Amino acid sequence: MKYTIVYWYLKILSLLRLIYTEDNKLIDLLRNEKMAEIILKTETRKTFGKQNKSLRKNGIIPINMYGLGDSISLQVNEDILYKTLKEVGYTTPLKISIGGKEETYTLVRNISTHPVTDKVIHVDFLRVNLDKPIEAQVPILLINQEDAPGTRGGAGVVTQGIYEVTVLAKPLEIPSELTADCSVLEDLEMYIYSKDLNLPEGAELISDEDAQIAWIQPPRVQVTEEEMAATTDGSEDDEDGDGEAQDGDSSEENTVTEEDTST
Image (cartoon, rainbow, N blue to C red):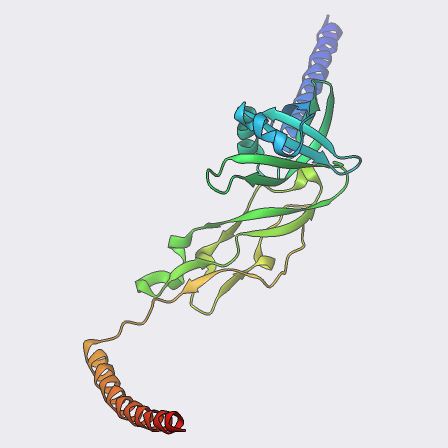
């Protein structure tokens, strides 16, 4: 009886260990998964050039998929496209399905908009190999501007110089954004450079590492009333002098003109 209890105890312990291990694998899998897989459902497009105008009137947007093979002309529902673009931006891979069959991993490469209405009129998607690093533009977000020591007492305000950098990474390892912590800006002589950004493992900075991302811009110098008055007086004197010179020049010009006329 005693051995039976020990047997089942060890069995239960082994089962719990197995469940625990499998749960951890599942947790790790979910942790590594950036987001739920996004699939954009499209159809083959048979209209080109000016004919695409009729598509847009009916709520259909023309798109192209290129790279790693031939370019394919596709079309997609306008509302679905807008929703997808809002979710993925330029850095999150998504799958494109054609007619509900073929699925291909892509990245948004270019979004064309109407110059007046700003509505999306065309989108280019780039096919990607999930195992091959590619270049991507990643936006930069400034944080803790109000905590920058160099801005205290009205010494200045945090200014952003560049808003994105180019990184090289596998499609699933491209960060959606990079943050620059402005709390390190202690005075007007300090800058945050591209090389100061914390890139995730597997991502490499391609942009100029010495590009200035953020710094503290001093306020514009305020001129006192006395300085303004002194500047005004000086300007009036200069204007008088210039006026006399101009009068003299004008007389000489008149004389030459008269001589020329008589000739």
